[in-house]
Amino acid sequence: MAKEQTLSLIKPDGVARGLVGEVIGRFEKNGLQIRALKMVRLTLEEARAFYAVHQGRSFYDSLTRFMSSGPIVALILEGEEAIRRNRELMGATDWRQAEAGTIRADLARDIEANVVHGSDGPETAAREIAFFFSELEKA
Ligand code: UDP
Ligand code: MG
Image (cartoon, rainbow, N blue to C red; front, side, top):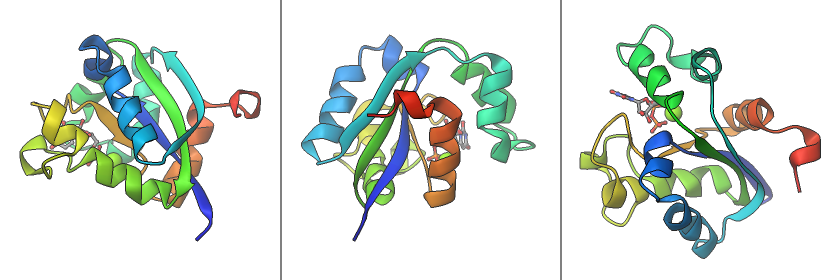
């Protein structure tokens, strides 16, 4: 199985609540290697572009306001099956349905402010990595 890259975001709630180290520690302990890392604050327009796939959904306006409400941390994670394994570590979108021991089950208490984002497939990962990182920023 070849190595794969995925995009992870620690959302504004995760940064504001001081969970950056906790979340990154979970990636590292689980064999996901950090290949790029930065803190940024999205404008509303950038958040709307990033989540364009959800345009028209009931939660889109609120989600994109939330994602532009404060700093976030963006990471490229690399490893065997990194996309699936990151999604496993994150847990289900709704923390109430997330498996115990996952980031969202342990740390989130809100379906919107759910600490992390992770790419959901190879095409999404490529698009989302390019959205946040230039070639120069990749280790
Ligand atoms: N979201 C929400 N309400 C919903 C579904 C999603 O607020 O009913 C938010 C939540 O922050 C989620 C994001 O929209 O993480 C993107 O939704 P998606 O279905 O892609 O979930 P994810 O891939 O993040 O698990
Ligand atoms: Mg998603």
